[in-house]
Length: 154
Image (cartoon, rainbow, N blue to C red):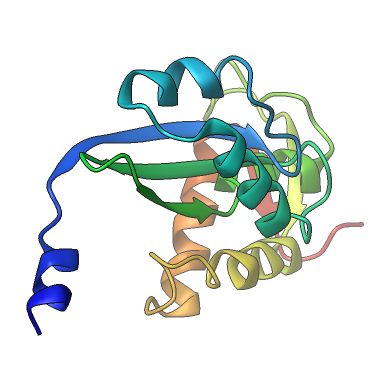
């Protein structure tokens, strides 16, 4: 019982947030300078991260929240790519509008929004949200990028 309590109350040295391409973590900048001051094993992190992210296409940007403990160990959570990244990929654009609400860059169908929502629902922080709420959030993000949502693409 004492060992379990000790694991739950390990003193945290830092929380580090990184954006790393899937399967491309290397013990070089930006990872090594972020983990180095906390004396974390950068090579072990890179190997484990690359093994965990093999299911994603290469160069898919993933958000990582790493918790560094004072005993030089770490845990990390890998989140799926951002909604804006999915929207840009589905719409086939490099960036959104510079004047959203005034200039529409492109259109996206409701089917695309639904598919993005299904992928995002597997994210640990969205798994208990209803699909309808996730879709509404994606539509709001698309509108703020100057992308119009239509029922069906022509």
